[in-house]
Length: 212
Image 1 (cartoon, rainbow, N blue to C red):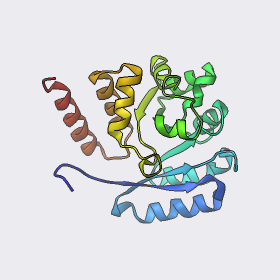
Image 2: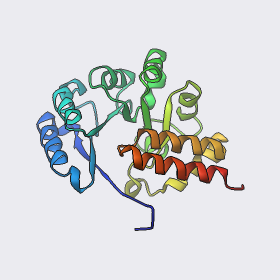
Image 3: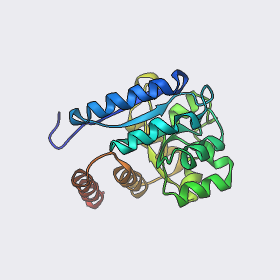
Image 4: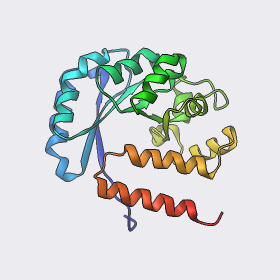
């Protein structure tokens, strides 16, 4: 592993498998926190089992010091984002792009300081977005929502994070400062200790000062 790089893990609990598997996932994540596990994710299609069914295991995860992220606002509409925020207390949401369909949900995300983990190419592959040109990421940023840029599953989508940076610059006209800000947002939302967060922010800010 390159010097200065560290890796930690988020264990995913697929929603179609139900809350019982979520309880097991939290237990395993808790037991392996010393081995680099930092959080849990309620993932996959939110239409199979209602998000509200996960409130108890999510509260347990938080009580054990685990970070929590919830998939919402991709397969389902903005109400799933509202449920993730209001009922599950999510501060990180996987995808979340369909929040843009309801101004009240957008405002809720801003007020609750929620970060959306947005994956443009994946969103097109799953038909959550029709095209890069119509993808809501730029509009979410304009509304003040915190957004990070991600690959989702690079093995399935056949992409890299660099590819998504290319999408941001070529399709949406974003520049260096925009990419830096999304990375600073990611650092602020990362499931890491404060010391590691400071190191990441310092490295990003140093990169931002480099000659262009």
